[in-house]
Length: 342
Image 1 (cartoon, rainbow, N blue to C red):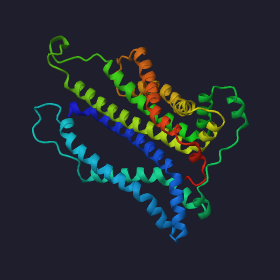
Image 2 (image 1 turned 30 degrees about the vertical axis):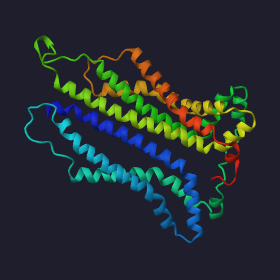
Image 3 (image 1 turned 90 degrees about the vertical axis):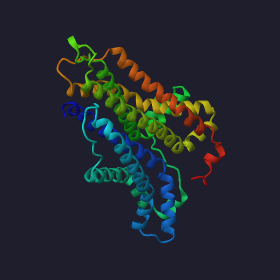
Image 4 (image 1 turned 120 degrees about the vertical axis):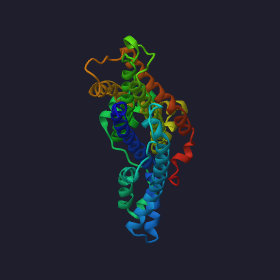
């Protein structure tokens, strides 16, 4: 119990960070399918479906995926609990897997994530008139004269990226928070590895390793890998969703002379503009979070490690946005501008 006591904050805080990234990812998926859901709601209204039936149809796909993910997560948890709860070979007896209360709580949380993330697009689809929903008109952006004046002299990729970011400020804030969450975990991991580990051998020798420290590092590494993996999925989702929502605007830009390369660079720039403040804010937050659960004589990580973590996050984001941005930029202009294309 002494060895496992320090592991509880890592697992609890890591699970909250993972939950937040899961909510942002599902919200991005729901936003990307908002037009399709609105059109589907219009079709159901046209044949006489009630609002309750429409809501059930729109939520079913997300609830089904949430339950499948919940079952898969519980299975993985059942397989990994023995390794977490038995850090040494001297433990007698098998570790118990998730009990009934844990399974019920995880299932309720998975359903809550699916419902809360898709609630706003679903309500928008229900409130949209049938004719408007069937026409699937493009979203009319707000006219901001100050933005036009500010971006008039910028290079084309930066101009497009700034406009895409300004048209969806809420999503930009969500992306920044998602990036900050990932950077927090990376900085906390680096801070943990920066601490001097004292073994149980003579004069602190590592001949007898510090089992509690080794377990904490393994768990922190596992949580960070999970957070990075989920952040990669979210980055791809955000980029593709932005590209799909802005396909008409990007097509108009191409008719005015923008090249596919500039369109692709503009989409990538939009993601970087949203992720930059999150990466910068995440570094001090990660150090502060680590300091809350550390001894008073803890050692901060080198500044070079912090800079490398922030720059690596931004470079990885730019690399991940290249492929979806290029695929979206090569979409035919005529098809993107067609009123029949939802």
